Length: 256
Length: 330
Image (cartoon, rainbow over all chains, first blue to last red; front, side, top):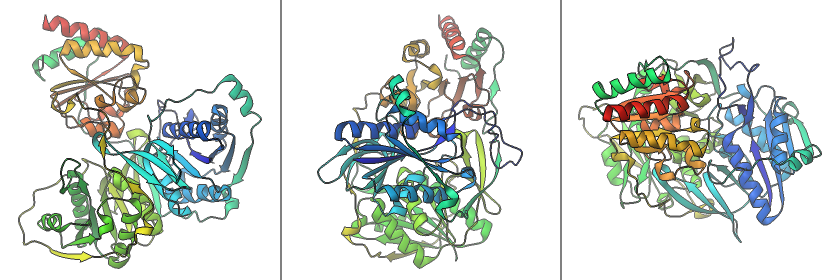
């Protein structure tokens, strides 16, 4: 099985994000970046499929230069090679424009399967994988927790709402967006990190792909969300705050 | 280009044979009504399926100009191919200026493809619509809001988040006209075969009826530390729940998960420990009567919905709180 895993580099989960002076994006200079979590699960699923059925795992990404580190981490975990589309303006592109870049790179490789995370932790659009499938004319399924290869294609386990699931049968090639939690994530081994240094990262440039980047949807402005409730912060040491909360639970909420 | 089209979702209740319209679809209709009022455009409602007669009649009692039944035997069960093809044909025939959808798992599965097929981009998970129209959606796990504008020509597709738009009681009016649209579909165009929905595990924990819930998130760091939160729950006489990452890691069973992919709860007290409050979690618990958050990050989105907050290290606050509750109970 030849599998492409599309990954994104996003600000680290606990990072303090601040709006930049343009008010259209965040201040990136003092941020740490990491692999998007559901993309990590997509990579894990791909590596397990390769271990079972053989083949090749290729990571694909688009973004500014800093992304190289995240690609190396994916190679260290066991991906065979990588394709990186240099793209400095990723944040201002809409989902269709980003999907066009990824689809162009996927097309050249003709994989059996394309996996990606169900949504990014920064923009949270949750659309890229589905649009890539549409642009390539491939069947797709989203929110997938488990993938099984069959004689005719795939059986996948899809998460529905409120604790329900569903099996879906589909042919390959196909595109799946992976939900977190289906597998246990692996760590890169020392040997893996060493090997990653010799693996091939093919560099493409978004400008060379000649694709339309005119946005259909424009992010005009970022702002801080308004509070839905006025939160009463209970100050003091842990002990003082705990005592104050017990008072509230006793006399205001009346649950003690 | 004319009009607002709201595409309602038929939720196939696995326990029942008849489909129903879930609350989030009525909220999408409320969002459509807000747009219609802002832009002074007529509003129509759409329902897809193979037997939509009674649902269409129910929708027609709401304040809409018309109801469109998109009927075909191949729409009996949801597939992304079937729904995308049918709606593509409907939108090309009706040419709405805006199409509004509920941001459900089903919509997330097909609407981005539908938009792309129309050379459009779905503005997904919208929480507010203001003059312009400007669509607000959340970014960075709920830490920031983004204001989005549709820049292209052609229909603008929007999906709206659960709980973001209030469903108003509307005065009774004469039922809207119902028309049927029959899309051209062929079984060979539908490439995926969906199976019947099933429950993941036997549900032995009913968080939905719990009065007191202590819920734990990523801030707990290690599985070994869960005992701290379990002791707090026991002292309080509360059920223990968790956010998704805790269940993903296998530290607590999936049935204790609160959020869009887990259970929806509305207890008297929801005490969130080390939960940052990503939107997927908030939709599952923001209906709680009293929300208390303990988190080290004062900017965590959980504080946007909390009534009481303690900003601090949970490894100090939780044991202190357990002790104080035991003392109060003694």
